[in-house]
Length: 350
Image (cartoon, rainbow, N blue to C red; front, side):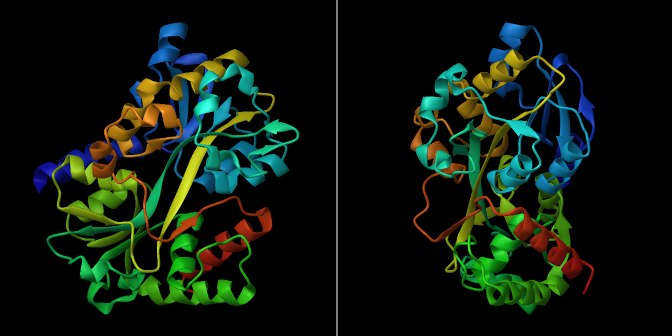
């Protein structure tokens, strides 16, 4: 256990750099999730430009948007698609010229179907990665039957032994699914209230709301937490350490799926052509294995993903899921603010 804990603490030191800058090429600043400065994703960029991009990090989508909208200067940013409408509405981004992105033709078609992603003005968002939010659990202490339902989070047996993400998107995907909503595009006031009531029921059971996957992994590695609502990467960290971790993506109510990608910041300080070099490097076929190995996500490039053996995809929990999935699709700015405000009230005990 000491080996697992010390190793994960080292990972946390890397992943917990929200807001800090890792300087390299001064002509391209990538505003990204903590832990996304994965060397294998920028091999082609470095070959062409002599160095890797400069990175600045954020911890969640709400933090990222607040910083960009407050004047933080970057060339590209990496939101998940549910957050995209805010960037468009605020006039912070401009369309990509997909003629400069050869692998764009291989992007998984459903990821481009939203009118928020692509409209008559162009393509506003380049999908690059996707995965799931589902039930992670300690397989030595928790049985598969106990995590067969999302109601495990309300079970008194696990009071003080569960962890949930400190993210409005992920927390509401859980609450909606748990209360019978599988599509959040047109949630009624009654459905929203039912989900909020469920979260208030769960709140006393929560040991901690995790801010990044390394934090969640540490909580599980030390034994403080037995069950968590988790992304793939927290599970991948624990798998790498040989920890007895399960990841149930098919509870009876369902799990969540999401995808993220890059936006082209308007009036950015760096060189525009390097933004395209970065995207092309990330969508390169060699990046598929790098993303999977580093954080357990699938690349959006179907042609590249097909080069990875099915057994490896299954082991990383990014193979297709047959159960119910709530897709974290784009939501209106008003609905997002409603989710954020109510979640803050719940955490505060109101």
